[in-house]
Image 1 (cartoon, rainbow, N blue to C red):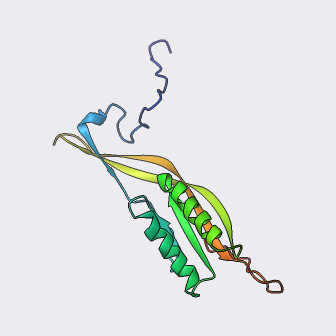
Image 2 (cartoon, rainbow, N blue to C red; image 1 turned 45 degrees about the horizontal axis):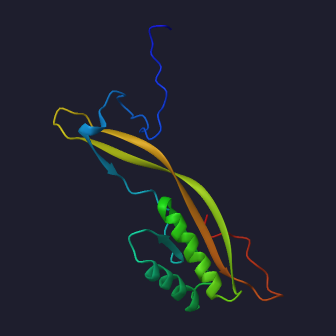
Image 3 (cartoon, helix red, strand yellow; image 1 turned 60 degrees about the horizontal axis):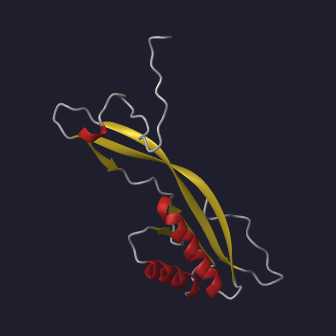
Length: 154
């Protein structure tokens, strides 16, 4: 056991690569694959950081106000979690008590491809975890009506 050197993980270090542990990250290009999405329904809204906040908020408001949906599901991944929460809270505030929120969090496994810069290199993959949030925004039922027990965000 004395001949093996143990290396403590350092802050900011990259997770281990599948395939070969001695790969130099400078010699590889990182290609992030798209995350696996839930089956897309008409009342699902996937929030991202590239689209304008007001446009995403307006889309959600239009879905609820058109009368076509009694509830929508707002999904956010990673950096977009704060934006998804903000959209849901803005909708609730604009609803004057007619809307309620139910939030669930999860962890999503993401896969990255490492492509070699040099021709003799071998490509590899790396998996990592990222946080996600799924917020159900729904109209409050008047007293006397029964609520559905199904959560459409699952």
